[in-house]
Length: 266
Ligand SMILES: [Zn+2]
Image: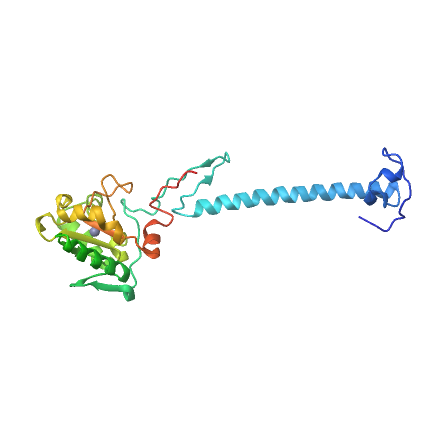
């Protein structure tokens, strides 16, 4: 507003004498321009209000749209009623119950000591070796059966073996992940057996071995956990032999980021 008027000039208003009116208004030259300015002010405020409301609703719309576009996002989203709802659809990317995983970079894959053909990511291999050594001191014989697998190898396991056994993809997926969807691609997953009872290899009976009992008690100390316990929320069949490394940031993000866990209510 203008400050160019004559200070102190009285004008007609309900406030009576000009001295009662705030300085900013008192500075207004006379009543007629003041009305004009009020009208302009009201129009400007109206336009500003409209722009704000339009902008805000556009922002909310784009926010909602971008949230809905994000696959695997497990945060709450805004529904048409503006009521936050829990998005439990964390299996958007799943294929027959299995989640997609990238192949480990070749440069980070190292053999498990004593097993030149079985490779894990460096951090996982080191902790796995330490774990096996500690178990051995307790008289438990943990042996790795399978570790890193490429998509090509998984392709043979899924389609090749599936064809030999006359299994449909759904039947096959209960036992093996489709190529591109195996935790073994990450270089963090390892199938283990009990060296003293090889007959239990890759069978549910492995859960009755000393190796499984020892792992259940101690694996977390080395950053390993069972990927598919009984009745896991991913719906994959129980695999007591299949363990994954979650002991560093990259492995944790690989298995947990934005999926595979339920959002926590506050
Ligand atoms: Zn496995």
